[in-house]
Length: 310
Image (cartoon, rainbow, N blue to C red; front, side):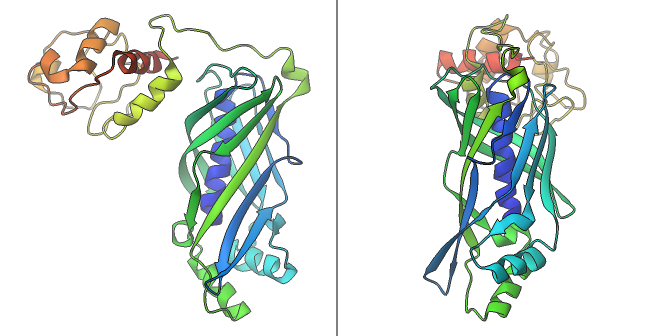
């Protein structure tokens, strides 16, 4: 349960970093809260939280987030001690170290909100865990951002690898049951570092090649993620789309293309990508790509803008 909770806390921090182009941001522990619930004896619900959370996003996009596991607060001292010993295995903290693109999205204006997808890697009790989440971000002021989870989160103890620890809690407390899935809520507030506030650069208003919305394009890309990645050299069922705009077709290293595409002599500029994304098999007869195409011109433009981003 706690591992998964940390995944989403770390993801929230990443969301802040990618949403607001600035030099550095610091978590405001006094106004932030991470809480989770549990149910024992089938019908007794309780709320727990962590009292110590720290974190920062540096100007180069490096992320460091930490939750003090010993700060868990269940309002019963002996239960706090048992969770720390048997569930957390006396680990002092869970931490995230990652790198993010500070210019991934345009800066939010004051009062504006957005929903973004974020990814990262979490270290928890010796394990490295890939994370992915959808976060709601609100710009409260020029120097403050609020991040929350976009949907209700249910966390399973089995997924977190702490089932044995929960079993031990039941034994020590002589309880017939403790729920193996818990709801989590988060409110994370981040402040722009004062010495950086005046110097914070604005994200570019548009991209040179196309004028769509890269944030909306990232959402369109969800339809492509089953087969494609945009990381260099990462092929899946389809080829990597890393720096695809401007590249010759059929050239991703290590991917076996259809003869129709590899012999096409196409260059993936805005015009050819637009035609291909509207109807792959119509534009390149014989392509192995099964996707039927995007119906909306706006989705195509936004997707190309997202793929064109630095």
